[in-house]
Image (cartoon, rainbow over all chains, first blue to last red; front, top):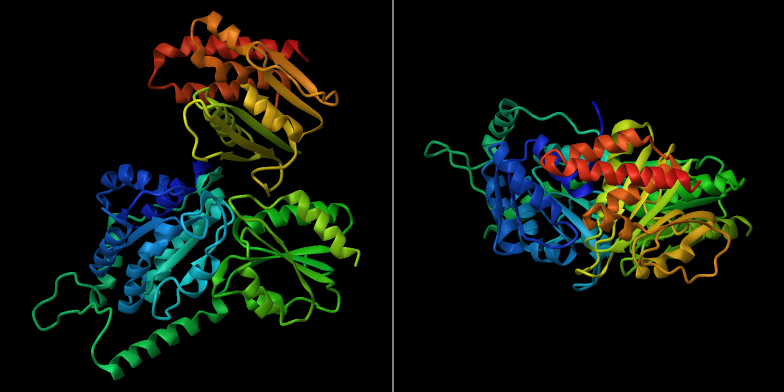
Length: 357
Length: 181
């Protein structure tokens, strides 16, 4: 299929439509406005519904409702907007509702800056709301990855009956790149998907066979069992982490980063290799579950240092890298924040310094 | 091959359209990879707008490079902001009608074109970007001019009355670009 030039946000929305998403509710915030804008035009074309809610809280709860009714549904926002949506996300995790949401991250904390950043890492991977739930979190580095991950996210959400997060950033969201779009699911397929969720959705049941969607109960033992069920689900993902390892076999320095920082790091690794430096890359594609295995496959007897690169000050992704590396080699950091991109040239010069240790 | 281009000017001068047309032409007509990354700060009319365009035969790493191969500046603030980012031997395309090159850089190629004056002479200042795109393509030949024209035509599909004006601007730009080689 021919590639088309698309903006990250628009490509994410189109991928969702093709995956069978037929309900979107959101509230405007930069740098993700092109997602709701695209849906507002596209949803009527496919018989879906687009709602600009009166707030983030309202729109996430509309998605909760639509997904509870068996429809593939999605919302999106950017950092402070995601914080507002966290109530609905936690409720969806509690009620085991399959929904997809996208965070096109800007620089935080607070209202911060609207330019690209990766300052929501801990929120995304550890606590996207109250109550100690977990979600699969995908971190695209290219517009193509954003498309593929969004398309797949709806399957995971249905399979797990759990929210799935696409953790993007202002670069992937606003840049344009050639992409190959996935196939459009037919109305029949979409109907079948909905039908398959009948036992867990409120889509019309005879009296006596009602389905309850519950984000909480009064019975302590019943709720503990619900927590245990969720725990089993989260643990089942452990070996499903995804990552990219690039030229790590003989590496003396390994650069690690996710999303746009990981992508820029790969090109720094290529330049440094061109200069004869033994350097490799580990780029997690899922940041939850975290690909600990990628760091287990490193030959630490050869590695002088790991360079953590991220667009966050203080470093956040570093916490998972430390947990994976377990003090088997020193970890150095190269950090930018405030909406500033990490520089490929600066990475190369830091790789050189680490390699000459 | 990796070419890092930045296009910069006032909001309203058509900087983003310049970049998108070029990126579309590369996507539709070549095997190169391409990224188009727009600035999206809290800009207002009269403020600056810029975009980065990377064309490469390999996977593209950074969509916004610190070091530029090519720079197109349509106004003075953009010149002042970006000229130091051009690499040694880099190519600067400058709208000399309203930009005074104040830098002492003698290590770059300067393609100086009184673009605003020329397009005002054509009767419509709005084709400034299409004219400068022509200059850029005429000089660099980074993609065939026919493929760019195809992208412009697709963009103009709903406005047939403006095709002639744009064609004229684009072709004059190409010619001027070629003549500066």
